[in-house]
Image 1 (spheres, rainbow, N blue to C red):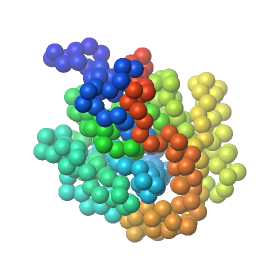
Image 2 (tube, rainbow, N blue to C red):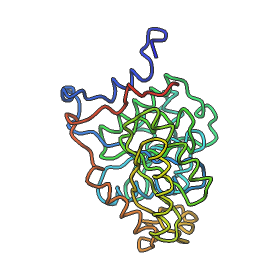
Image 3 (cartoon, one colour):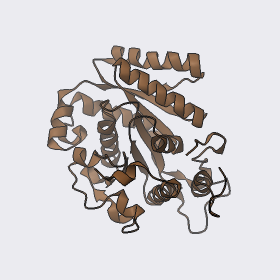
Length: 298
């Protein structure tokens, strides 16, 4: 992608924002930047947002300065799961009315929420420069926090793939349903084409037990190895648990409303699996967040 109107293309500008380049931080840059963990799924209804909100809540409970960035732009629902009533959302950031810091809302356990906006149709079709502006806002969040959890929209829309390709790690949520498995593979395939080195981890959700979780994971793993020559990891699994539905009714993460529930324990295990690399890391050691060789077309 070249220049348009004398302005570098989106992916070039993203590189300028996110690449440390091995030369250390700029003089006014922080010593550490937050890690970015993206949560995605192939279709709606897999429990993606429930996982994102609970993972962010656990991180905050563990003392990490955590932001949940709701990137389901225009159809955001993380605020409902957290019991937050946002006055501002990302549309106000794009319009220049508010900075990203000004739209952050406090959530359970001390996490902060950047709401993607509900019913804001213009957020569903952002142009290149608007995507760049959002990327720059995530960069600002990385400067002041330890972990940024991005809850993307389900599917393989260009906007969703931009966020997934930009993340350092991706949690791909699926259920045992054949449609969910098929669509999860489609996301993995699309992401692999755009970013060959993407670090993707499968999370079977709403499964009966570890054995069923293993079967769900193996179905995606086997087809990925066969057709993509990729071996996605198994991040963990979340059991079917009625406490999750009750926590949604309470508008509070299950890790806060029913901390002893099986699902809550599973969310904590999932966080612990990523804890060694979840916290902010030194800027000088930061890899490029965007891979120019595999950037997706916009």
